[in-house]
Length: 144
Ligand code: DQA
Image (cartoon, rainbow, N blue to C red; front, side, top):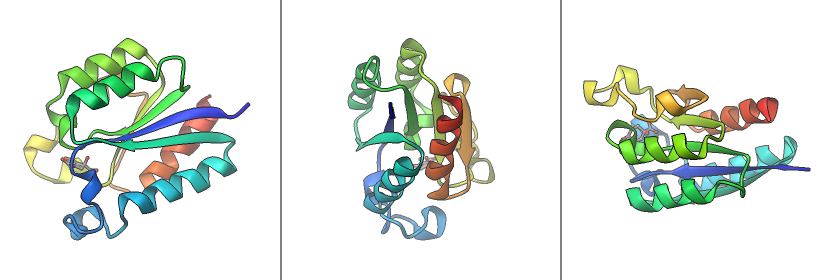
């Protein structure tokens, strides 16, 4: 049976395409959703793809993933660097998690060098642009 993967995107990622294209690329979030769905089809995964600008909504979606999904891919956006609530939610559900960042957060401002999500992630992919989402699905397909 196809394994179900929840792909979550945090604040400002709805602005991809127009938001700082030199840093985040020219693909829109809808483009990345299509890429994920196409890749999932090849890997016998199903993907539900969501975005929110609200920390609490992301926390609720993570909690609801228990029993509904086998794994999570998350680009928490700026909440990576601030959110103990997202850290706690991921720890609570204890599903395999791949953290994705489009940009290489370690070559950017120092406030982006720490992620509260990384300690509760199975793996972290950053700096590879939209391909990071595709690679995250491959990693989960191997793991699940
Ligand atoms: C990001 C990196 C974060 O530092 C930033 O706040 C984002 C996007 C990335 O995908 O590179 O919103 O998560």
